[in-house]
Image 1: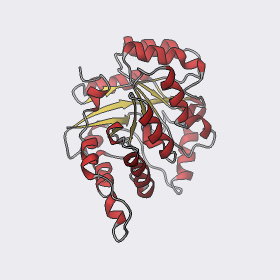
Image 2: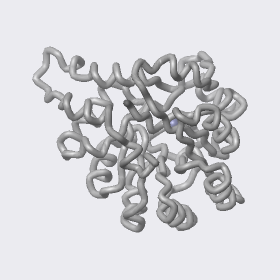
Image 3: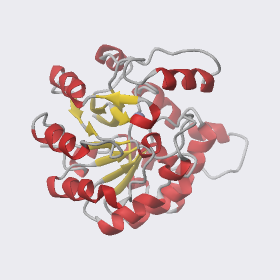
Length: 282
Ligand SMILES: [Zn+2]
């Protein structure tokens, strides 16, 4: 059984907005890709048994807005396969009410934050209520960390060091930094090393193999393979192509004497029981 800790549900372009679409076309060499998520499409590219964490995303600054009701409906259609997380954008009024309602009424079980896309630092004192609530109710918080092609999204907001600050103040909060914080993999590795409840996911980076190799080699050198969680960032990547990308990394090194990634550690990461680690197995 594989746990995918990072996937989305939304309709494209309605939930992501025209500006996001225009900028993604620019970033992806002039062509548009249908990013609408359908459960059957997701499952078609899982050749192994999988349980999946899913969320939408809220970031006014970048035009992304998926209501949590939409996520809850999607989860309720596939309750044995999916675990839903809520989203808030703390730059917008009403986020504290959204947080409580989506947790208590919609029964969503974790929080997704898009700090860079929404333009806030997760260590901002405005978010103290969020970290206290997440800790009190055992809600894991998964954050986009690392870059994006969206022009108005500030790089400063995405740095792993802000989560070091959060974890110093809220050591019991379960935090997942997405995408190994590309290209800040070094800062990601040292942050997960410091804090027992801070993890990173490997989603949506296998298609940059040199970057993924470097980030995982830093993870290996700092001895923190056990802090990595498997994730895809579907629809940007699938379970099968993420597995293939990870398992093919050492072959990139053929003909060199560069150090190899520990394939046993990688397999343990792929099959890690992330739901138990994050308190979501019940
Ligand atoms: Zn994502």
